[in-house]
Length: 293
Image (cartoon, rainbow, N blue to C red; front, side, top):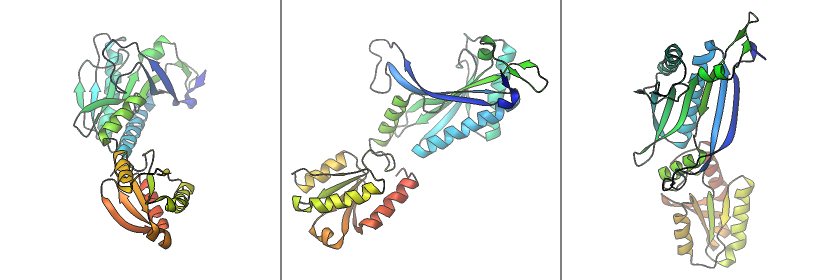
């Protein structure tokens, strides 16, 4: 048994979910038969409901802001297949509504679209094409604690029923990744890009200097690759652009002699010649600030 002093009790996991989807409905990473869900459940006192909901609303906002997503919010109410009585549903819906209003969050009511066990707040991401995707959700549940006979001991040493909150932030991780890739057209921000810098020597004679530059960046935590292929420099730059690598560092004999690099950005083009340390400082600052440009 848990004491009221133990609550709220927050439990989270990355769970693998399987769905036997109908033939023809599968679509890339958007709709798949097995996906990873960032599932969490919070068990709390009735007096803690608003603070816990607000905490999750803040969590969702902070995560989506990092990725540069806009979103809108819906409050989904009692569906036709609901379990539990009307009083329980009214209490749960009011709790969600009061939390949204306390935060000053604009929302629309989506009548009848709640989960069968409780109402929910849904967060719909908007991508660069104006499409919306329902990802995060906060579901308040008075019914499941009743069905599973969950109890805690209150301050009067009596058994009481906790309130349960279901929440996900990303929803299906695979689908969120797909939405992010489409939103950015594959040009992930520097802090998130799998390869942040490509070092491109103008000839094989500059490979040692290219390796020296790459090693300095790698030692500082930058994800960097050296293009060692026997190809023309223009082709190497073009292919790095197609791979959406944020930065290309071109190194020739002049750069080797001066200890510098010629910097090229995938969108802004030629940024001029910089000392390696100066470039390192700039990219570290961009990564630390998690810029989405």
